Length: 55
Ligand code: SF4
Image 1 (tube, protein in one colour):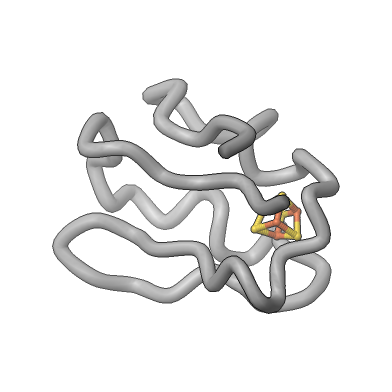
Image 2 (cartoon, rainbow, N blue to C red):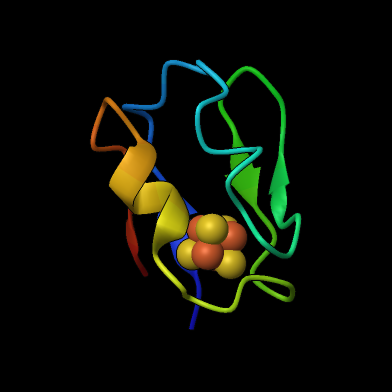
């Protein structure tokens, strides 16, 4: 399982430095690599848009 970033992402960048395994990539909206994500939930806690949730 991995967390996913929805279209509610505003690409603010809050999550990217919080991920302990560097699973998040920048883009028009940010993307989590499901093969790297450990489902820790750290990024979801810091997202101001509530755009990150468990898949
Ligand atoms: Fe990284 Fe944890 Fe978010 Fe997965 S749930 S992308 S491991 S911060």
